[in-house]
Image (cartoon, rainbow, N blue to C red; front, side):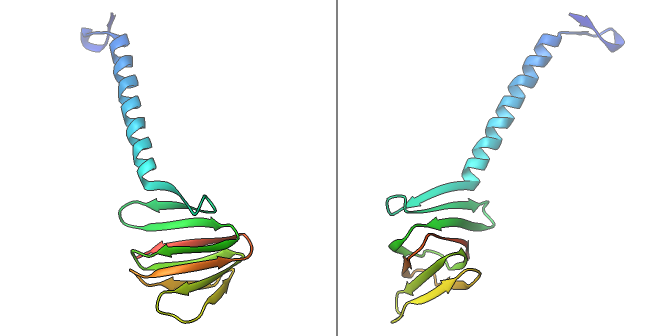
Length: 129
């Protein structure tokens, strides 16, 4: 027991315990929040992987695609920029494949199926609207 300012008796052990408990709860809440904001997604036998950020206001992902052909479905509109390599894209309702290289952008409308054809490992950034 320590006598502090104004003669009030304080127990430093209780105060330390309080701070330890508070910090652990606060840290746990921050960790849970970070886990909800960032999510690693794996598709097609882990040959396509993306790290998605969603804070309830903005949603976007960065991803890597191994060589192959893959089919997906868009729930929201997807605006994608190729950051390395080349990605050929076919969108439901279109007759032709379109090829995009690094720094080129393409859009997948919401509620459409689409396919990617990739001949070399490629990467992208995708914003969802």
